[in-house]
Amino acid sequence: MAHPFRFEGFTAPHYTQVPDEVFDILMPHLREAELKALLYIVRRTFGFKKDSDPISFNQFLRGIRKSDGTYLDRGCGIRDRTTLSKALKRLEKMGVIVTHKVTDEKGAKQTTVYSLRFKENKPPKGRKGREEGSRQNPPGGSRKSLPPRSRQFIPPLVGNPYLQQTEMQQKETTTNNPEDVVPFENSSSKNPQTDNSINKLLDQMEILGVSQKVATRLVKEQPWEKLQKLIDLTLDKLEEGWKPRKSVPAWFVAAAQDEGFRFPEGFKTRAEREEEQKEWKEKQAKMKEAEKEAWRKAKEREVLIKQVMSVLPVKKLEALRKRAQKEVLKKHKVLASFVRAGEGQFFLDQLTDWRVKEIIWEEVVPRYFPDKEGK
Image 1: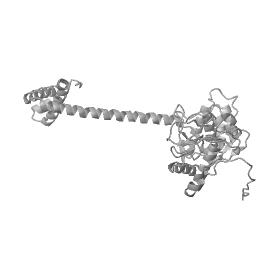
Image 2: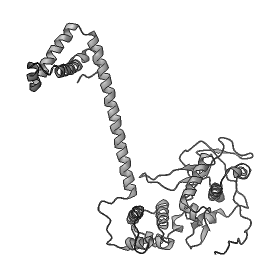
Image 3: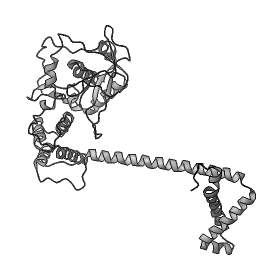
Image 4: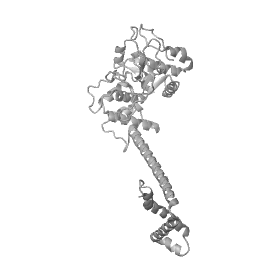
């Protein structure tokens, strides 16, 4: 049996501001997982004098490790992704937090940004509020406005001599500085040095069971495109029930280091498949829109033809019908032979009616409706 956890004691005096409503109003309504997730968001935002912060599921579940191998925190205490996902969705549905889904310039999903939700235009008593659009802290430490999510009040975080040493901890936080995760001075020039790309690869490899030390080395030595493709291949194989001889991490590391490793012919990454799916949906949407437009024009044409036929003299309509019938019999030789034998009259009438409408649309409608093209 594992030795029971024993807390060593608090170090004073470092604090994280927590809104009173968490204790006075929300606590009776929150489940354990929801309270843990909420307090972790409070810590990652107000604890570092920020209004919002991008937090990955891996950070929620396993915490943040510094470059020297020590932990900045151990996560929120939730152990599985399903419970965490349900807790975050319920917090947002209850109006406790606000999430902002972030994508890069290629449309790929990035780390979700979390913040608390405040009453619209109602700043706490004794404070001067800032409406949305005020400058907030994004990843990297610079302050810029987040895209609008909802018009909400975001309170200023007032300096306090008893707050934790924010500047020092921000340097230690892996979400804010990629260099604190991996020293990439010798990285391949093909690898764009972006915070989200590094953390995404590290998170995915940790899910596969690769240790952080090994994952860090792979990110330094291998092309990121190959690593991402190999991660997607491994996930696909696992979903199909594949089991490697040794272990998933051992197979993955060996494949990543193998310069002669070949991917299955025609294999595409999940991002590429998502892009194809997106393009297919856009194509289907355009086709549906074209069908709707064709149907609308057909209905408009039918209405115009009926309007013209209602005002044409009877003799004119009879003349058009005789002309149409001659053209049909001339074009359809087989039908003409059946008509001469006393058969096929029904089909002749149908084709004649269709040809009469076609003649009216091409020749008569433009006279009554000059703005409509008859052809």
